[in-house]
Amino acid sequence: MHKSTTTVLNQILLKPSFCRQISTEFFNQPLNFVNGVRKTPTSQNSDEDFKVFNPAKGEVICETVSSGVKDVDSAVQAAKDAFPEWSRLSGFERGKILMSVANRVKERGEELAELEVYNNGKPIWEARVDVQSVIDGLEYNSGLAPTISGQQIQLSGGSFAYTRQEPLGVCVGIGAWNFPVQIAGWKSAPALACGNTMVYKPSQFTPLSAILLAEIYKEGGIPDGVFNVLQGQAETGSLLTSHPDVAKVSFTGSVPTGQKIMESCAKDIKKITLELGGKSPLIIFADCNLENAVKGAMMANFMTQGEVCSNGTRVFVERSIKDKFVEKLLAKTKQMKIGNPMHEDTMVGAMINKQHMEKVMRYIEGAKQQGAKILCGGERIIPTDTSLSNGYFLSPCIMDNCTDDMTVVKEEIFGAAMAVLTFDTEDEVVRRANDTKFGLAGGVFTSDLTRGHRVVANIQSGTCFINNYNLYPIEMPFGGYKQSGLGRELGRSAIDSYTQTKMVYVEMGDVDCPY
Ligand code: NDP
Image (cartoon, rainbow, N blue to C red; front, top):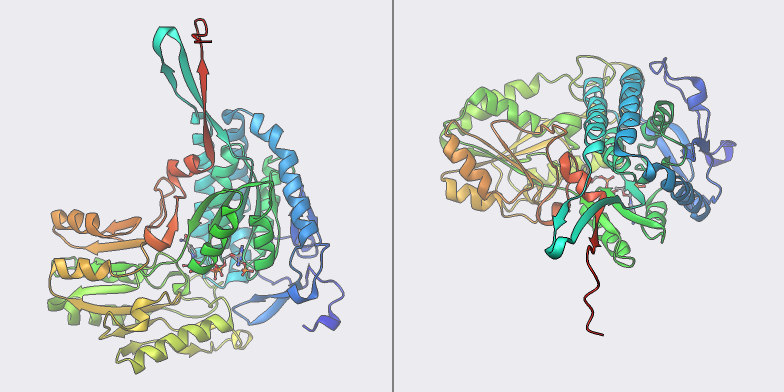
């Protein structure tokens, strides 16, 4: 679509046939959601226009503009205005509203999943898992909300102190494009449970599902202004993170952007949570259950087209079983069905955009030149369904004979490209596993549970798996060591990160004053 033909910037122009359940009205309204209504950005700067794609067809869904200063101010103001009333509710009252929202998400879950497939390209079964994770987050935090409480501390002479766990105020959530609805849910559920309000900015590539989520929140009883969505690119993000009325930023994205956000937040000493990239190790010992280890390696590399921050992309296999492992892995990987992400049996959908697909292909080409053996995949697939021939489909790739110094072993690729490495001893593999600036996740497959616990204790990562990979129950705190992040999402930890502690001293006697 050329700009000249776009008379309705910021309007969704194409409604896919498979999104039957979503009203046409949803597709014909502006993309910001502020104070309970859909709004068109007012601060239009033509340099900041961007197109939104359906990755499976490679076609433009709509063109929009990035929200500017006025939009950011009005969304933050809406969240600020909504804060006093929302934060004064009891945790129990907020919990009941979150439970009602969870029920509404259940009713409209399939719509959210379809929209996610439309805009992200991941297979429908995975989108359903993401939506379920949003529901889990709402239910879990609705249960935690009434339990948010302080302590009472006895002091000398009958005096005492107590603490209050108070919300922070207006929080900003900024998300990546790989798990659009899940990230929006994971950030907003605990933030709102604690009594905060939120302005959420999705990635420019995946703006749609957060708006539908905001509408569902409203239907479930979230008051206007408590959860707002602003569309935009880096400029909008930086206007939000530098806004003086914002108390906290929770960010999911790359390390370089995380560094910028940290700098921006340093000015006002804003609280931050950073969920950043990874290059996680998966260690497979010879005594493992081989079938499970192969499945684990696939779970660690191929979900959402490999665009997963916690993926175990460095697969270290003990030398004595390497050939057997690779043989089984290759057979299973070749069976993965690639294509229409709306089909129930599709295992590999479309990558987020052409640039990213080409970047992943360049990484694989580079691996070849550095001596890796490509066992399968890494090729663009043109599906037989001609409506998908411009889609960004890439076959899952296994790279054998990898060594620690190769670029594909050192850098986050963010695509389905698994590097297989061999090792001989536990000490050696742990040292190599930790030889990275990242520390998001890690895993080990072994039948020797003593060794399993010993190895994960020595892995420098925020999330570790023994005999499985990439499972994120809502009760588990999730986050990274080293450059993979700061703070934790999910679990009780998220509640800690969205509240602050106030201490109140209560004098029960006279003031003992030397003056
Ligand atoms: P980016 O860092 O490029 O972008 C993330 C978000 O930040 C987007 O909404 C982006 O807007 C916005 N943004 C960009 N610049 C700024 C800025 N200066 N100030 C404020 N906001 C800004 O990451 P990607 O979207 O490309 O996501 C991929 C990365 O995310 C990978 O490294 C991956 O590992 C990581 N990730 C981490 C997860 C975790 O939980 N640890 C989970 C998922 C992904 P725009 O889209 O317009 O550029």
